Length: 130
Image (cartoon, rainbow, N blue to C red; front, side):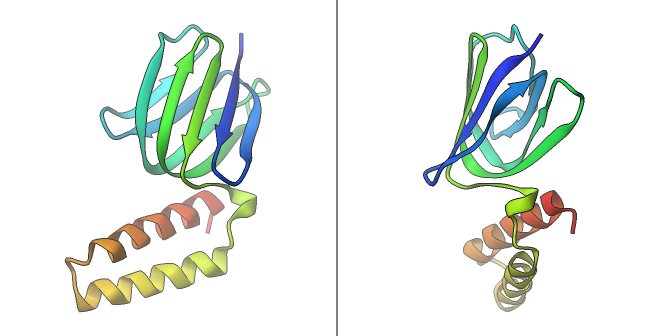
């Protein structure tokens, strides 16, 4: 049994397809897995990855930079500020962003913008397998 998954960001539909399971990280409850028949749900997403387990058993991992997840009937909808598949991530750019954020945090360890930038860069690198 499968359900429809759609991951949408302001730029485009980042992912659309069938899945047996979707795993996301929410601010309220940490990691949560959705399978067909899941009760209706709405949650706020953390800056983390979303894993889509396809019917063939393969996994698609997408970097998600905040947003919302909704489960209703046979559909999981993810609305995200930014979402990037591994193939869409510019590894050199993510490495440069990580280095820049680390330097900013060395100068001011309380710099929340730099801490957020570091977290996003590390997520991109993890999803890209770098």
